[in-house]
Image (cartoon, rainbow, N blue to C red; front, side, top):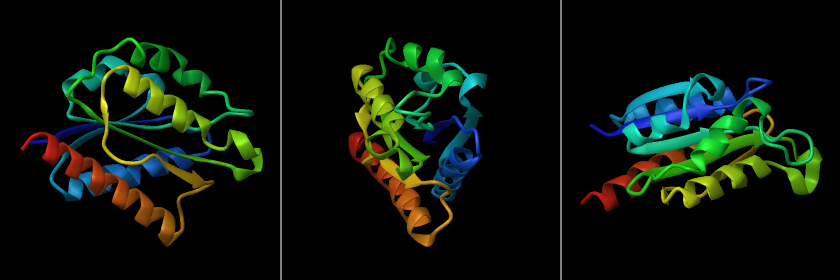
Length: 153
């Protein structure tokens, strides 16, 4: 069975919602999913799963979540060759050029760790409550599974 770990950082609950939507879609497709808040787990947990997913928020002018700094630093040091990753997060377009930059930063960390991007990053403005947002996240989850299946066939 395919295993996934979804890690979220959330102040307002929006990124927890993003994580839940992704996890539900993966579960519908038969994936075993574990979801955790970023300060309650270790980046090395990704070594034990097939799909590695982070849903971070971006703080202020492009800052990573404070509670996720150790996780981020540890992620940069891992060897995740053979793993499939995806990053999706919500932010506020009010911040212009800094909108969801943590999504990009986590994607770079996964690439540095040798993981393969399984789906294009998804950036949601505020809460993922529109049909369009939910469809983006559903497609994201489906693409992660498809990339995993293709790499293991």
